[in-house]
Figure 1 (cartoon, rainbow, N blue to C red):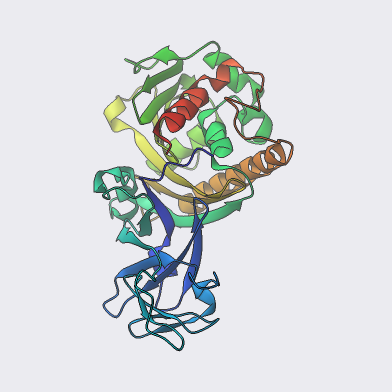
Figure 2: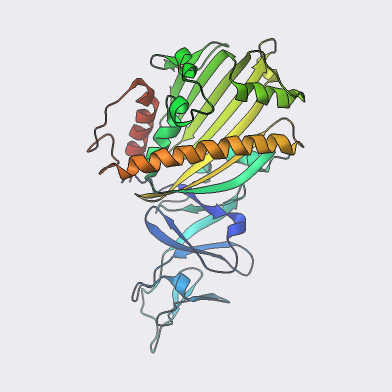
Length: 353
């Protein structure tokens, strides 16, 4: 599978990790998480080297973890401190992973190379910005390979069909044809894509949208009960390989300048557990109606409904496939709407270990 190991992966929210033993699976690797006496995150291989029992079936002690099968004890650095009836063998131990807390999440470096802190997506910083409001730290489990959900998020053409309650089929008529290269220079209809070595940015613009969700978003920003005129809408999607997305929606009245935009950002992390299981973390933040719980509920309900619908179709798709390698064995028919997702898959393949 296309796993990129020299990368940071979210292993849970900060509040999920305590003094107790918590199990996680990242990139087919079993990991046990806990905190030491000073509160720092400890991440170790969750497998005793003696008979391969999960250490999470053992117990946490003051200076380590004792295996619940035969009593071998491992320090927080992974080294074996005690073995039953003997001195610990010279090379006895479990792997220790670098783990840190940032932006409200626990991040684990899976690779063998030196951890690169620049690879933690800075877009997630908005989650702790007090000038932005919204809801944070939701999680869905998806029984499918993470790149199938990447494909879904890259592709706007599924919206009127998977999310038919919220998008009219006419939504797509203004975005026909392949995407333009580069970035948009003004308020015009279309799709643009800018591709880098490890990231993709694409833009979807509607210069005169009458979609009710975007009108409601502008109404909320103005403190009005409704807004029924056409609006300028720009969706800027940033993807950071292999699994991090930022969806930033900007809405302005047609009479307003772009710097007056009301902005809502949804941040997503599709963490590969195995080739058939993904943990999907997401949050939503906005720069308007900061204290309005009704607006928060509006976004929460819309986003949760959207992602649950996406999960259903991707889960069914996965169950219907024998291979998830759409560039290899699977060989699906490709449409114009798949162009950006295919570029993402090529980037992941080029970076994979």
